[in-house]
Length: 124
Image (tube, rainbow, N blue to C red; front, top):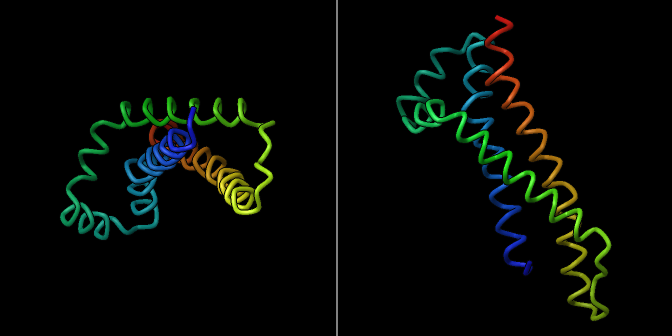
C-alpha cells in the first residue's frame, strides 16, 4: 500500500477512535462529575453528539475495523527500512515516530470509549 493510503488509514483510525470517546466517554464523564448541565449545554450547541450516541455500535464497529487495518499495516511494514537520502530518511523516521504514538493513542481511546459505552452502564 502506498504511503498516502497508510496515512489515510492512520487518520481514519485516530478519528474513529476519538469518535468513540466523544459519543460515549464524554457524556459519562460530565454526568459522573456532576456537570450534567454542562453536557446539556454542549448537546444544545452540538446536536451531532446525539447522532453519535444513537449510532454507537456502528461507530465502534468502524473504529475496530480501522484499528485492525492500521495494526495489520504496522505489522506488515515493521521491518521496512528508511531510504538512504537524508531528506527522505528524515521524513520516514518522522512518520514512524508519529505512528508509534498515534496507534497506541487510538487503542486507548477505543478502549476507554468502549468501557463507557458498553460496560459502565451495567455497573451503575
